[in-house]
Amino acid sequence: MRLLLVEDEKRLTDVLTGGLASEGFAVDVAHDGRDGLWLATENTYDVIVLDVMLPRMNGYAVCGKLRAAENWTPILMLTAKDGVHDEAEALDTGADDYLSKPFSYVVLLARLRALVRRGGPARPVSITVGDLVLDPSGLRCRRGDVDIALTPKEFAVLHGLARRPGEVVSKRELLGQAWDFAYDGDPNIVEVYISALRRKIDAPFGRASLVTVRGAGYRLEAAPSGSTR
Image (cartoon, rainbow, N blue to C red):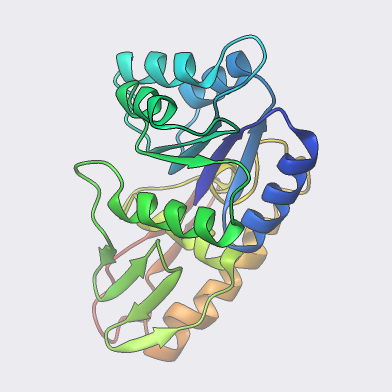
């Protein structure tokens, strides 16, 4: 799952980025409102964490511009302010939720999962490709009635494919989904996770749903039972 964090407090940003990454989020970071608006406009995110008090453009303005452009990515606003008027302003500009600083990380994580689970009006709670089912809010995966244990990064790669079943997804697109915006490592790391996923979601079930399209990327198909192609 891909998350945009727009926050100018570096210490808080570092703490949240590390914690959220361990929970399976690929986190992009902006330290001011204009950069946050640009990233939110140029990329697709599952959820945005947006501070109110930001340099160059405050969070209310960022949120308002995104909603005016019909960008309905779920937004959780953070602020050091505390009061019903600030909360009302956040919600009136289009935010989906609101959390005052200081806040509990556990509560933040629970609210983010709730927003991802709720998603946009057309986004399902779970993603189903054949008998493979993914629950993004709980990072859970199963094939039929069998639960499959995936690491957060494995889940993120599979999620990037499951959101576009039957379509070819390039390595670069998977890197954008499962790693952060600034990742500049070897793109072949994707192959490592594809191999791990095949061992977990296909091999034990006699399937071949995860297909390599040479020179283009990978495709997740609803492979019928017993398929070994």
